[in-house]
Length: 360
Image (cartoon, rainbow, N blue to C red; front, side):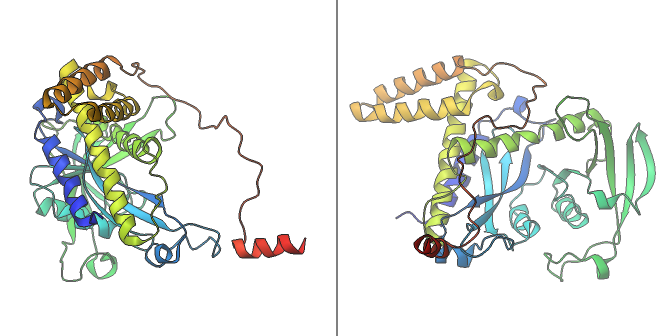
């Protein structure tokens, strides 16, 4: 059996190998951007899994599934999972994020939603030589003091912090934080149909309005949605929304194996984009997954390396021709066409339901 630690190293290695081939045209204003987000993954309902990854507290015993929490960095340039940490629903996502933060390289930019744009996170990132772009949390508007106007809806703001009252529970008490910190807040309106949010305020450590204009920050934040699509590729297209192994050790190995496979498919897509001279976003993840599977199946027919390489090159050319249509501003209703099965939801443990059937 493969160990989870070795497979996790393979995830990081495949992402680093892919980032090595990134050119300046894939970067954002010459900067490497890491997108951060978290998601939940259901596990088989076994006693061992429940001990390490308990089900949501609002679900009755025996009626739910254990849930694993995954916090990951994904490269905005390639879509690969660069690093990740796992925990359960009781583990604060900020604690898992801080474990990832220590591996960031100086000069990188972290892009995330409002859950990660805290005072402590911004200070710790900047001390590390890393910048951040986050949506401002709804509780951060009050108490902030504007100190300089950089443009329309673009200001330098001084945030206040009371260490004794506001020290995060997930941060070690030995870490000291300043009482104030200057950040930049940029607001913009979303006019694209289909977006529920019509006004967004960003907070960032990128204070230079000439090097990082407000419109560039707005475009960057809208690209954060790509990580939602990449997670959908992982959980839906690759069928990772519920794992199959029944012990925590095997769960961790299975998850890492999924992420290794995902990074390999992203590598195939990246190679196809270079061969076909097309944008990476135009390629279909589902198409790449199917074509890669067919190519792997064909390896059994020959042991000649040249045949494998020619087959791989032909696969890349076919994938580069099978492009998704360009649909800017596309929006779809959140509805399901297929009707669900007419079964009642499980509100009692299975053993209790069996006894009720016997009495009936």
